[in-house]
Image 1 (tube, rainbow, N blue to C red):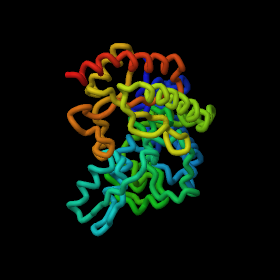
Image 2 (cartoon, helix red, strand yellow):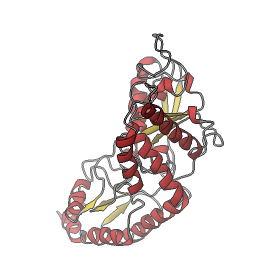
Image 3 (cartoon, rainbow, N blue to C red):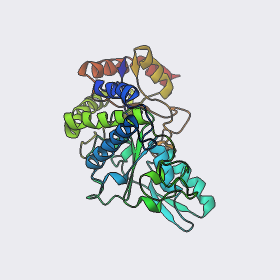
Length: 340
């Protein structure tokens, strides 16, 4: 399969990530922080090591600033549901529903928000974590919500909330933390405050291997290679009259390696079906980002969203050639649809 849906989740995962997950199931099977026996202590140390690694990777003040979460979405919900009555939030018109829906829900609690238009080149950490260097302290970031299964090449079901002042947040889930067990109030110490219940140890350790993979190959080198693929696709598509593009040529300074397009006269899902028959995996339709589709004019019945191409570390020049050939072959179908 030619996999070009890496902005949804990267695939395949590096061999080191898959091996680390298997090792975790075999050697780190005890609950961390819940037992005094050897395997539990070793598991706790292994999780802590990944916490330290993540703090270095994202320039956080220390490992206590790293809270492991099952997704970027849950991290965002923790931050947004910690807002107080009277708070006003500025968000961009490129936001995902993981931001917009919690904000909409918080309107009932006296929180308001304003949508600010930005250029298509601006970004978030769901897509840029592991692709663009981020330093939480240097960049003045209070809360960084990051997916673990995208640019960091970790498994699905992993994410992080990186905090400057985690104690000011409201934990969405309260329960066992392995600390202060006789107290009914949720312990406020970080990161346990935001990590009630048994952690996804195999996922966390595999996420650590994913960060090692990115560091070894270099964020800059990975991004440059993927952007080279995107620029090649863009150059080819801009010379195809039947293809619609929505941005200027992607610039490495402002873009991550993602490109949206459509074929004139065709539904985006129809294009996706053609590509799928050629064993090319892309994302098509509406991408859980309604403001983006309104901004780009892709929210109507036709094209019904957009086709999204996102290469990854394992994408080859041959993969891109096959994509370009297949989209070019749709020129006759497009012309027939427009005439109708």
